[in-house]
Length: 583
Image (cartoon, rainbow, N blue to C red; front, side, top):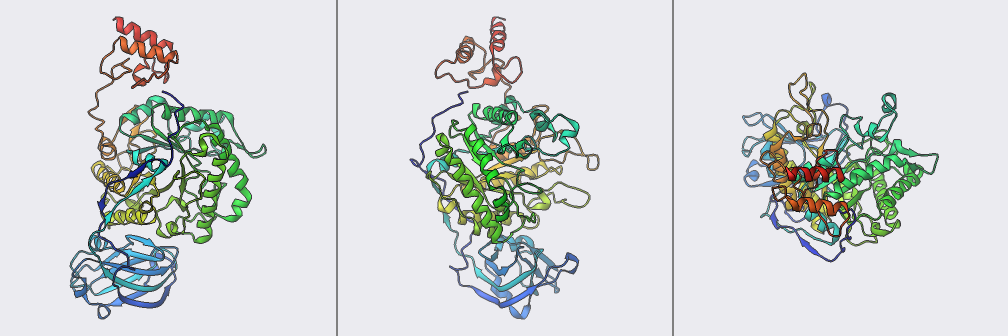
């Protein structure tokens, strides 16, 4: 439980991820394309009820015999929304199959063979037409083409330096969601606004170190602590952060660090929605000093913490219009400005912050190909000490919370979910990890729809295949009361862990993510701080030395020594331990 450790030397280790095979894609630039349409065709998007094509290709404009071997369709376009590709038949084939791109990059949407076959099938002999439709925004198409997919590409991901060392070392991450990220003026209507009032306002209990111990025992070795600072900042006093709030955040950070886990601390709902920080140059001009003041205080408070602690500049930042799709270069440029400001501000505080690993997000923390195109990794005085973060909640109808109005998809591979995930991972690889830039998916998850096994398959497939591309994943655990919904008859949230009852409620998903079977774990022996399966004099000696701050004393399982069950160790636990040993 040593809080301060030696900062790992940056830039000294050359780290190599495993070599894998991609899903069989080569770029359009490297392939010989067959162009089906070239020019400029536009279509305004009004409503889905009036949805119509920008480009329509009849059977006289392509040869179905060209589609007898694996191919990728490409659409060059201009739009804030990705185009939708439609294959249709009126002569006995599938009548209407629409599909989103597998991935997009540099103004081109790619629809791989896997995506097309998942939606339409692999028999194109009765295909009568191909349409390109707007994806929820005005669309201009300049080219529609296809190329044959070549041999699978051998992929090697090599990381160097501290950031790469940490990402390679992460097994899986867990989010302490809906806790310190809470906000709302209404909180003061029901409480005095203490740190614990905020911490519990979104339905979770006060966080204990025992909870973090359970997370560790389940195989997660990284915890992301989302924090919303907005209601704890005094704008009239140099943007000073409330001391009590900072103290409580630090206390929970210590829970994570003392369990020898990686910890990510961020600025969360200060961005997005009706927040004070936006992805616009005018907002930066207004609030840039506040942003720097917040990070100066956070970084200064944690300056002496070692490399197990990482800072994340901001969460899912949006533009002034709260656009979740591609917002255009003005907003993505503002994201680059804020990321650089964050890095410079933290580095200026010195100490261990001079080398600390920092995490920078894309626009909306999205995997949108155009946002990745625009992203600029900040310049940094520390070498190889930056990680790029994105979030993944797709397919939306599968991952979103079920309601009477939608999000009813229960099988994640329906509608091309697998090929879309493959494409997303490959796109992140081409933009970042192939260049040695480490990446995490700082949030992912799928709401329960009484489909634990399918969600386990979803999570396991993502974690395994992301790992092959050097990407590590963090489940968003919302916590809360685990209660059946009155309409659907089952709990429909994102929690894996019941914080009220210290129980993993979806063990199959946990095992898919971490590899640990939480149902078979043997209960810890009370007092067994050295984790050898029994309580002996050695445990008493270890706890006593630890309480006396003896040098080089490590408690393998400190929670087993918390015999008072108050979330901390003290002399009272030692007394009970001695009594149990005598008994």
